Each structure stands twice: as C-alpha cells, then as structure tokens.
Length: 185
Length: 183
Image (tube, rainbow over all chains, first blue to last red; front, side, top):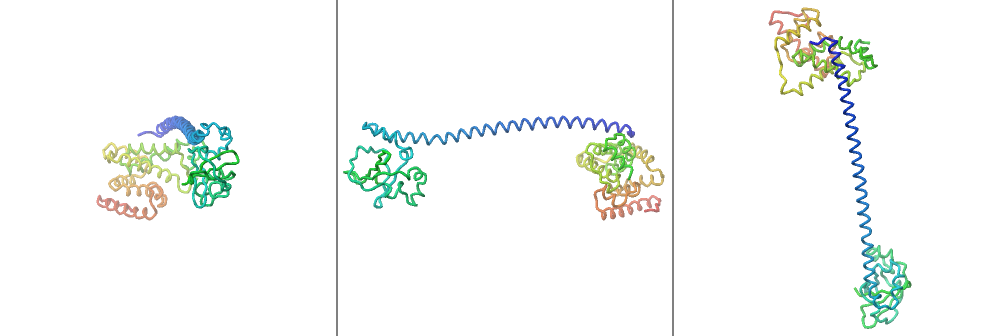
C-alpha cells in the first residue's frame, strides 16, 4: 500500500502529465478548427464565385439569343438594300426584340419576324396600333399573358395598315421608324 | 468549518500542501469505503487515488451543504461505479488472503476499537449496499442524509437499506455466537 506522501507525489505527477496532454489537445484542436474553418471559407468563396459565373452565364445567354433574333429579323431588310438598314439600327431594342400582338375585330395578329415588310404592298390605314387591343394597348388579359412584353413596348406609337392580296397580314409602321408584319394567328 | 472543507478551499486557492492534508485525512476511510464496492483493497486504493485525481483536476464545486467527507465519498462512488461499468466483463471479486491481510492492516490503523474491527470483518459477507451503508453510518459517522448523498439514494431508501443491513448482520453475528448491542 502507498503511503500518503507517495500518493500525493503520484497525484501531482499525474496532474502535470494531464495538464500537458490537455495543452497539446488544445493545440491540436485549435489547429484542426483553424484549418477546417479556412477550408470552409475557401469552399464558400469558390462556390460563390462559381455560382456568380453560372448566374452571369445564365443572364448573358438570353442576350445572345436576342441578338441572333435581331440579326434574323434584320436580314431581309439588309438584303433589300433600300436604306431601311439604318432605320432598323435606330429601332429601340425594346420594340425590335419583342413579339408584337394586335387584336383587330376579334382576330389576333402576331408579329412574323421572318416576313419581309417590303414584299407586301400597303393597302389602307386602319388606325393607330394603340387603338387596338394587344401588346401596344394591352387588355388586362394580355397583361397577364405577356407581362414582360408589355413592359417593353407599351409606350410605342405606330400606324396599322392592311396589305393588298393577303387579308391575313397587317403592317405596323412605328414612330421610331420600325416596320413589322403581323400575321393572323 | 470542517477540516476537509478548509483544506479543499486552501487547495483551490493555490496551496498545494493542502492536498497532503486532504489525502492524509481521508485516504484510509475512502479506500475502505471503495473496498465495499470492488472488494479488492489494492483496486480500492487505485480508485481512491483516482478520486483525489478527479478532485484536483476537475476541481468540482463544494457548496458546504453537506460534510466534505460525504462530498468526497460521492465522487469516490462515481469513480468506483465507472470502473465497474467499464470493466464489466473483466471485473471479478477477488477474495485472496493477501487482499484481506492488507485490508486488515488499514482497518487496524483506521478503526481503533478491536470490537468494531471484528464487526467490519464479519460484514464482508454481506451485499455491497449493506456493507456500504453500515460502513458509512456506523464507522464514518454519517447521518442518513449524508449517506444518501454519498450513495446517491434517497432518505427512505437509506433507512430501509440500513434496517435490512442491520438485521442481516445481526443474524450473522448471532450465528457465530457474537452479539452487538447497537444492532
């Protein structure tokens, strides 16, 4: 059996060892926590950067599409070579890039982006575009259907004409110089 | 203020000599108390050392609501119970002669009265709880309340346990032709 002094001596030795172990444990733990925190930070930053890029890409993509559409819709007038090219360049992106829609006598006419306005002969003036229900004078229903379109072109003024030899087509000439073909739905 | 409480306060204030006083005052009693759980005086000594080790490393708060002895013995009980739980498979109750000889040596130092020492020796055949409660109440002078703190039982349980332990010990002593007036 141990004497009292032996036991006390032993206890102090054990306590010193314990204190050392605790210190080294703390050090290891601090290091581990620091490195894990740094790793998490790096991960968070890289995820943030990646997500930012993805977001940018997703925003850019529609812009490219719109540009392509513009090129497509402009091509006929470029081919015609009658100086309309300049006028098309002056078109506001908001009017040139979106699909127009007009309702005349209950019949819906939608913009035909592929049609060449020069291939049609204007017949008669039937009124301003904003007099008819549609994207230039939207009803509540239209507003619900095409809210993003309405936002872009609501304030545009223009004249609406019928064409010769095709009762399914209307031509709209806008105050900013743009001309579009609207075809019966 | 009780000695143990003074020593422990001194130790917490940074006086390392106070640990010598605590160990000197409570070592033997604690070993004998823990021996009732593990029934191996060497192991009980190790557990008593572990108890003091916990006291100086964890530095548990002592509010002075009970005696320092019952506070220390409660820690000792936790240590013993932890040991038994962790060594469930390996734990066996050794009853070799050497163990009893060492135990008798400590008993002789700790219990001055030969009559009491004989009584303790005859307690060895009782169950752990009976031995523990008899040890605390008769030899450590614990009240039922203090014994309940040390053994983590309520007053009612201690009262019943003590009654049954006394009856059991009395029967054993009578069988051996020995009588003890306090039982």
